[in-house]
Length: 466
Ligand code: PFF
Image (cartoon, rainbow, N blue to C red; front, side):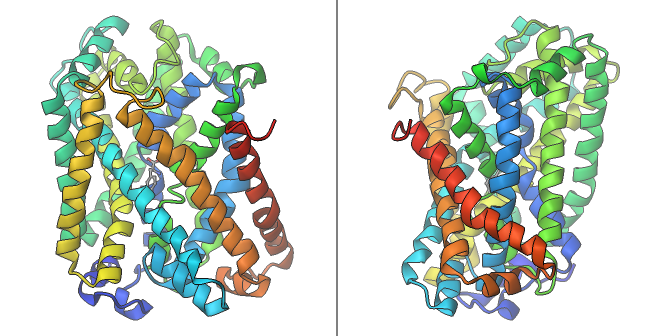
């Protein structure tokens, strides 16, 4: 692609016209970048462990419903606002509100999104560091002969070592911000081109291996038999929050990527493709991991370590496990990296465009703040493991605050802005949906189903609504 897109924003400073900020070279590149953002730790690390914690099938069903009724309409709305506003999230809300004569206070939704993405990145980088640490371990054969207990011990030893966690977390932050600062757009694009299909193939290999464990059907039942007695109210909120998290919503990423999208590309088709790819990867990850969980007598609700305990056992046993395992964790780290890049871009674009500072300065500033904050997550697994607020460690608290509170709130605000502050014709024009019935369906979904859905789940969890 040409040297424009995100990088061009660097030299452009606080200019928010499309031409000066640069655009994606094609719809395909936007699709790759958006999929790169959506597919990440959320699909492979988080989806399986929260599914395990929340009892399986019923949770998966609610999650899928949230993707369809809330995630996809919101994804389209965010990309649309980004493209129409042609600025960082705060600037985009402000610009679109100005265009339609709505209150300028809507821009706070953009500020909230930037802050959400920033906070998420601080713990996301630490978890991505786990994948980075596991890649060489897999490649040199450290997983040979592991069973459930020894694999758990290996993972526990890593968590117990703050230097190691901080080291790998720092490396992830350096890689992320280095790419963003240098503007290696070609590099990102090239990485995405082989990484996405590569990750997909490796997941298929893992699912194939999982079918040989003798527990595949058990996993299928666990994932797809909906037993609602196993799903708590809190679980419904977790499913909703995860729909936001996995599609990179309410945190500025999709909006800022939308702001680099050329006019005339179909937002609808691309968004549907992104959501489909994202969901497919999550379900494949579930199908790869749960057979191993059951085959090794592990606990589905084991928590954030689930894939880091189960997959090494499989890599230690399967033929060519060192190669497959090494590749898998590298791919996972790369998938996390493309998501991390999208998490950092809203903050950087915001600093550059709002305060008129140079891109490099913005990267350094946010990098320092992110790094300091990431140490909180690192320590929450060892030195601060006993330090809790409302019963949650620093990491759990940050995860809960961003995913289950800030994202639903920001998402609610965004659908209200799109569905109620903008007019039907403005939105139809901006989205470029020619098909009247299709648009009406989306429009009604966005105006009613999405906000009411978010509100019900939200109030219910807070105990305000029985
Ligand atoms: N969607 C990413 C994942 O599933 O791993 C995480 C993420 C990326 C969340 C970008 C939010 C975001 F803005």
